[in-house]
Image 1: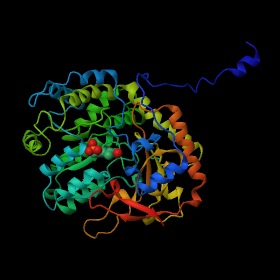
Image 2: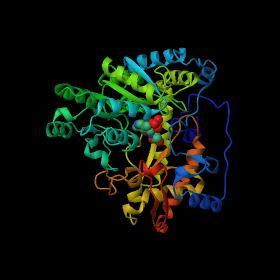
Image 3: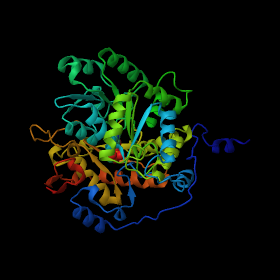
Image 4: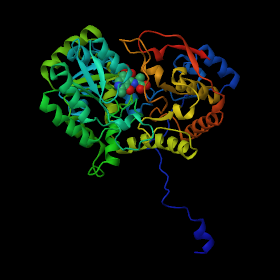
Length: 469
Ligand code: F0G
């Protein structure tokens, strides 16, 4: 071998990897002009939720219900048993939740918030306090509507976008115990634990933390209920980051994680690779009976819960695919690819890079825009104008108002979430996205912020309208 040849040898430590699937069907997208997009975002009240999907080029609004199903899932749709009662697809779904998540009793719901509604109505009474590792928008509103209030007991580092703690989703057990002692055990209906904390930037909870949490809660007789929406991404981070889990399969890690909790609610629109679906799973028979009774009031019979049989089949099959190590590595790997590019270009993002999304730190992006002028909302609008890339605000607008004082809640994190649907976009889409964000970053001084002109009562971020100040 000549010296010249050896110089040209690729650095084998930088090995590429590819997704464990190939594309079978495509959906065309449309590129538009900057002028067109500027008009559309104005029409949409500078709210990316109010844009029409056909006006979006790369849709990174959410990873919820936007994933691509496999041929195995699509084939399952044809096997939908649309009986009103006792559909065989329900039993397949039930068996797979029992097998992969380990819970005993299952109630299907149309999506995650259907299950959040049931669990909140069943467990919470007026005046209760629900501790959790950072709020989630729909989770908290159901806790409030049931008469409770949410209390954040996540570790402090979760509120610091630059902290590189590997498990920023962990519960601060000291804060939790102080709260239980302070308000009294009787007013704590359960601990609301979320796996890969969405609002913190897709940050995981360690196995050690959930194990210790369970031990602490057992001491007080408080149940631990899990928001399992992205628990598989959480299991992957445990495999990658926690001592003793490197050689375990994600499926086994998931089972162990769930075993420390008493039950769980799920938006299957994320991890489970379906466009619609959810469930509530409980190990307590009496609570399950209440859930099974309540579901017929709000969702549908307890063997369909607002879903078609075919949707339950797609979900049952999606669960099987979602725990595959190759799948989850590629899924999170794509998020890391996008985040890595932005980091290289010194765009301020939340560290470590999350499981389902890259989160832009709008406070550092736009230090000149005060929080009550909606810096993250402004940034999401600018990214859309730049390249037709749709993202979502996760800051002051999402945090809403305190129900008692009516004032804005001022979250420490003022973020734009760039969420990646599973198995949908290519590396080239990530490149275009990164370049668009970088361009907006270079023009950051021009942004001035927004003001609210219309604000709905619940979950205002979905339908609020704003205009430039
Ligand atoms: N829990 C978490 C952690 C979620 O991220 C979501 C939804 C839900 C519960 C509610 O589930 O939408 O099926 O009713 N998150 C979506 C998102 C909206 O974009 O992150 P759902």
